[in-house]
Length: 144
Image 1: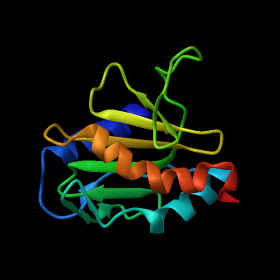
Image 2: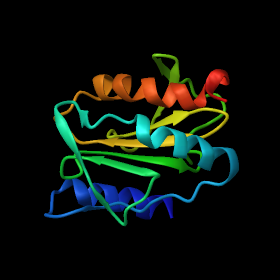
Image 3: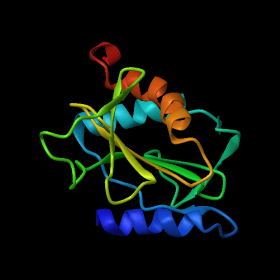
């Protein structure tokens, strides 16, 4: 299912008209609660690109441009992430960079996993830094 979701996001990166097709995750419990809190905190513009709609619409998905950047909140733990992998910390949020997909990053916390796909041409470090603020607010111990 994860592969299908990534494929849908990558197809969206090719840029077709209308809403961007992104398979929404189905988080449960604390993860769903964190994602619900995250949705209104996400920026309307990211790396100079305006937010747009996704199809199907979901409070667990955010898309900027014609799929240039997509966020899915409440995904499963990254399959390729080993317990010994080091995360890159950006503004207090640990990020896992998928070794097989240079455009796929996952924010890792004990509450929720947040997956972000960033198209070539965008500065991943800047995008992740901007998203780390809102993600940190809902995943930190103070988020309660």
